[in-house]
Every structure is written in structure tokens, then in C-alpha cells.
Figure 1 (cartoon, rainbow, N blue to C red):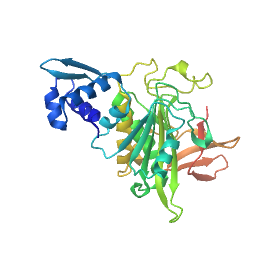
Figure 2 (figure 1 turned 120 degrees about the horizontal axis):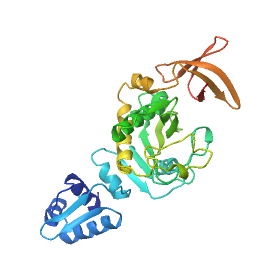
Figure 3 (figure 1 turned 180 degrees about the vertical axis):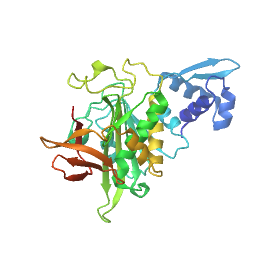
Figure 4 (figure 1 turned 90 degrees about the vertical axis):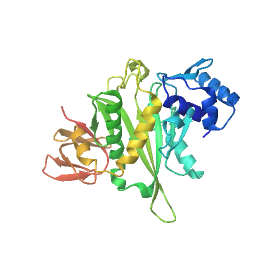
Length: 316
């Protein structure tokens, strides 16, 4: 951990109070000049740090600064390594590249803007400014049930965002988090297989959270079906907190029984739906979610099917 991150950690821990340069230098084991240079760099990144002679430095924690230093400070003591990119094509692509280069999980890659994000079924995932986009990589041996990974992430993010924002959310099976009747979070999970052993080596969980994306920043065809937590563009929630808290919650969800809570949030249960395959819409009723996270549906002819993946929509 470099000096800038250590300084930011100390200032975060003492938010609103002055911390002397001498104290930080002693704690970190560097010179006061190194502290001064670290503060200058953090200020250039957008952190508001007040400096007073004989008092030291004080951080205004209200600034939403998204940077390598702020990310690593937010992830401290979590065991998760964080990588920040100001802009990228796709965090899932970056995460898989880092995995192939030997980076060990758990780690994540996050960005404020994607230019080529992908959603389920190969669709383009819009990633405009104001959103938070990250990919969390977990080791396959930390996954209790591969069939539950995607819905565990949906439940974890829904739970975290309600806690951070106070805004109620719901889940559309499999993995879309909604605010009222509009999508606010999308998730794409990809597995990395060990070709020699034939088992699941790692899992890449890609998440896109519309935190403070304005309506006009979405393409016209999406403006009536998507939303963000703060559509006016002003958020009291920091982006690094969204990333760090969601990542930690996803990992924790692999160790607990979350299915009943997921079922309570899933708004398709008990509803008349369409099961969508290719260009075909087949009427059905959503009955329940089974122990494997599959959606059990009954078609009009009385036949019952357990869906492990796919797309559904509510019939109105």
C-alpha cells in the first residue's frame, strides 16, 4: 500500500478532524515531505483537504472521488485487491485478462465509464457517466453453488443499495435490480474453466449500477425502461462505497442462506409472464424459485418447467 493510500486511510478514519503531518509521518514511517506530496496528489485528484499550520490536515469526506487511492482505501482490511480505470471497454474483459496474467482472487476492476459493456444474451450494456461498473473475480472453490452465483449477486447488491440510499428495490429474475418498474442494476456472470481439471476455476461477476445517471444520458430507446438511484445527478453516496460494499456483500452471500430473502424481493413470482426464447413469447405463470435458484413456471397447457436461465417479462 503506497503512501497516498495510507494518508487517505488516516484522513478517512479522522474525517472532520485535523491530523498533524508529524503524526501521519510517524504512523506510516515516511518523512513529512512525503506526507505533503501525498496530500498534494490527493488534492489534485479531487479530494478536499484543508491544511492549517500547527494543526495539520483535515478531509472533507463529502467529495465523490473515484480513483485508485480512494478505491484501495475503501477496500482496506477486506482482502479484496482493487484496480481502478478511468475508462475502459469492459471491466469483465479486464478482469479476465488480469486473471490470465496470474492475479489471484478475490480482486475487482472498476470504472466510471465503459465503452463496450455487454449484458446477458450478448446484448450491449449501456454504461454512461454517473454509473458504477465493476467486475469481481472469485475463486471457484469459494462458490458454494455455481447455480446461485448470479442471483446471490443480485440479492447482495439490492440489499446494499437499499442500505446506502434508503431507496426500496426489487429483483426481476434472474438478476436485474429494479426501482419501481425500471431497471437500475444489471449483472453478467461468466465462469473461467480449468481445462486440465475440468472444473470451475474462477467466476467473474460483472455489475453495472446506475447510481447518478441522468435520464438524458441514456439512449432514447432506454429512457422509459431504465432509471438510476439519483436521476438528478446529485448523489450523497460515494461511488467507491458502492463498489466496496457490493463486492464485500457478494462474497458474504456465498456463505449464507439468502434464498428466502431473494424470493421476497423477486417481483415476478405469482405473476402471469412470458417466457422468451429467441423471438418466441410463451405464456406462463411464475410459481416459485427452487433451491437451485431456478424459476419454476407452469404453461397454459399445464406443463411445468424449471428455468435455469433465460428471459421473462410480465404479462399485462
